[in-house]
Length: 126
Image (cartoon, rainbow, N blue to C red; front, top):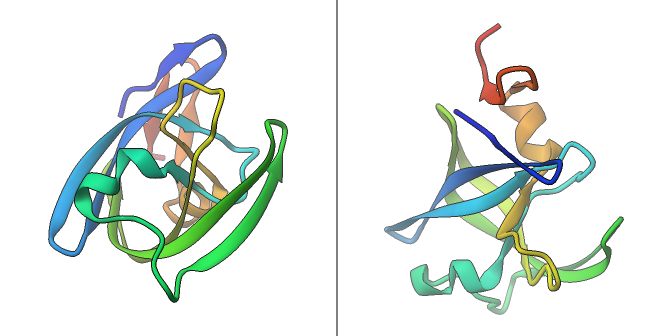
């Protein structure tokens, strides 16, 4: 999967499936400094992802500041050639940034991804 480098950020796309609906989310940053992946909730409201009773409220703190989110079990997240089934993903706003989410270490480590910075690729080929 090719990555695009925009001002030092590595962008890619992911696919999210929830309750029978699937959507590709573009402009998602590969972020090795993020422990958890987060998607902008406005990008997925059209496939029925929004806060519901039973979802977990979480507070994430990073370089961009403090972000209040909710965590929800998603049927499937696809990244590169890896499908993650029944995975918890955080959803929030990420205000002030022109990005639709962060792919954190939760998915990168579980999927055993390699970030090839020379060729700007996210791969599982070793």
